[in-house]
Each structure stands twice: as C-alpha cells, then as structure tokens.
Image 1: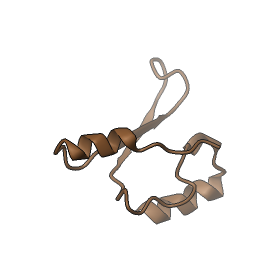
Image 2: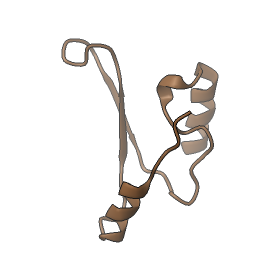
Image 3: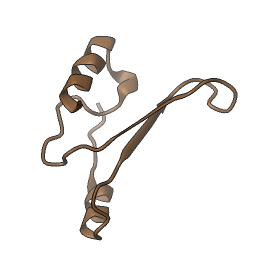
Length: 70
C-alpha cells in the first residue's frame, strides 16, 4: 500500500503558501476521452485512514472516504 508523503505540502505551507490543494483525475486516454477531475483541501492534522490512491480502493471504500472528507 502507498503511504502518503506530505513533505512537499508541509514545505509549501511553511513558505507561506497557505492552503495546498490536492488534485486527482480519473479516465482512460486522457487526451482523447472524457476525464473527471477533482480537487480537495485536507486538514493535514486530520488525514482520514485509507486516503492514498483512489484507483486501489473498492467502490465502498471510496464512498466511505468521500464522507470523511466532505
């Protein structure tokens, strides 16, 4: 399982960038097919368990995670 590394986000916030937005995309053939993109700002002091890579989560895990970050 992938363990998130927030060192880049922490560095940016220490440099007074304030909030850092994470962006993810889903879709096949991004240049020729429809793509869905999402962005979220998480509180780094509370990162819900299981927030790693949406592509390795089950549908139920994605739904549960969505409720945690909403």
